Length: 406
Image 1 (cartoon, rainbow, N blue to C red):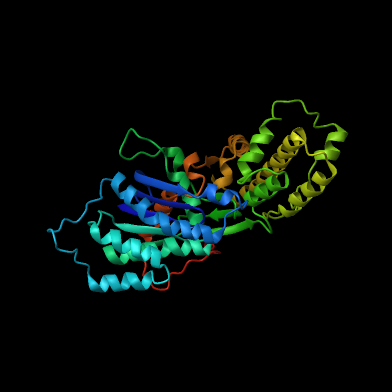
Image 2: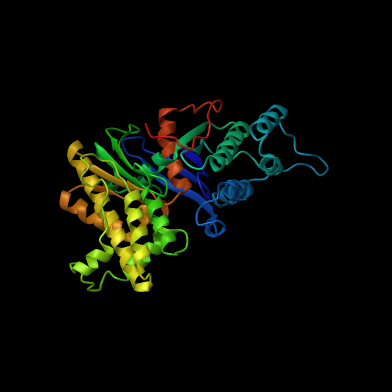
């Protein structure tokens, strides 16, 4: 099965083509082509993603990224017509595409300039992110996928972005065989997914494939959002996560007297809800504590580094404690961690040690798949296609910025 996957939930325009086989029992994936256009430099000056700019850039980038992906996959073939003869476009399909993209005239124009000039590629399904995310950005990718589905008569599969993060752990980057997946990449149920990103912090229980129960989530800020806000307080550039981590690492091999009372007075931070008796998270109080401490400190480079380390260590402790509780309460066999924040080296290292001690099957995505990407949308699309072989009717499918796993 070949899947064309499209991801536009935030500030990356990503398109990939995957080949998949094996079903639920032995899922295996081959990446045929993958391209991503990041907008991070455009949003850096705003200290975060600006929705209208994200939408504009997706509109500009979708056709070029699609063209490159089809070319990389060696399925891009232009329609040859005699000189002086125009390309014949099916009137009904053109009208349907115009209706789907009526609110996106620029995208409609580039779509009709390019798509009718190429042959329908050898693709079985078109998968696209439906949500959650920034709705203006989601709508662009969703409607683009709908238009392709109609024009090429290829089944349409909407995908939950968070399901993509869960299932991203199944992809193993191996270049020495057509299909290859290690046994350690298999999910054994019940499984627990810790999803940590700029917009989400969730603990999701899976009793079987495509069955999700959210048993814990943040009551305020997501963990990635907390990293960005703390970085902003310290005068660090966006995105804040890598900046905080880089600063924290400067103190990792130094004797900073962490048991010293003066150190604790300056840097010791609260751990909100860590003993709440449930699996929910809170990071707002942690962020506020740092704000007040910063006001009382001379924020030189050394102080910034110490505060960054204490913040990162506190986050790790909270995530571990809540995850441990969820595992014990549900007799979990596989721990999955997905989302952009798992790119953090200290969090990865802490959970790898934790899994070894608990003798857990730990699945963490390749670094390439920690952030938003189309590969994970294609993987999730594969499983959804197995469940709905004819695809999903595009009518009534709407972008949903708050779409939940269920």
